[in-house]
Image (cartoon, rainbow, N blue to C red):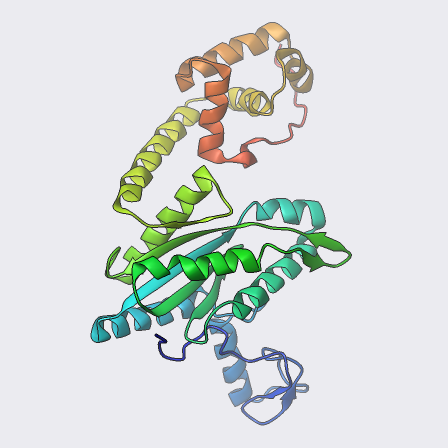
Length: 308
């Protein structure tokens, strides 16, 4: 069953196109050569307000409008609607290792591959950063929702050309379905995000369908992270420096060298940190911090003034 023709790819293409005055442009979202007339300026400002400049996909604002329209149609016609949230795993590492220019090339190729594996009736959008979304209209049942998700994972499994490098990525997808999982736009987004986060926490490079149990798990995780955040706030600036290096796996002597202080002082800081964080062991402390802050918690430390 196919829905209305609202595919996210229905946007100005890379081919020569014409603006409101008929002037040729070099790309779908490029302005015509020469000075812009008021009606031309209005046309291009309107376009940029609705489409992502890098991938030329609908942006978050346009996507939310289309999702609201899709929910209204599904309600009116008694149909099932699916929502996929897709996140590139460890994309920050791609930018760090290969540079942001290569990262942009990867995002553009991800968009192209997703366009090739989605239906004309689907809306594909880039929500920002490394996150994409697909609206799946006219689904026969919730059971068929994983089919486009698996197709997207397979489409992105091959190497991506980024300049002189070939880069391999994986993606994680969360899926929610109207009206079974939620009955409005915000609810669908929350449900798909909860499913995606659960997949990232447990496996990655897979998809996850939303279930009510995930909502409870998400709330428990939020409460646990809030508790860790409160504990971290009780640490002094020096204790935070020591904690960062502990999480990075450095021994007391190395920490003392990096911070220009004595091993005894570091031992005292470490004992205070363990007490304030209510951690019974160093591995438990590290897991606590990484669960709250992620791998970004491991930061390089610049030597500071001594506090002997």
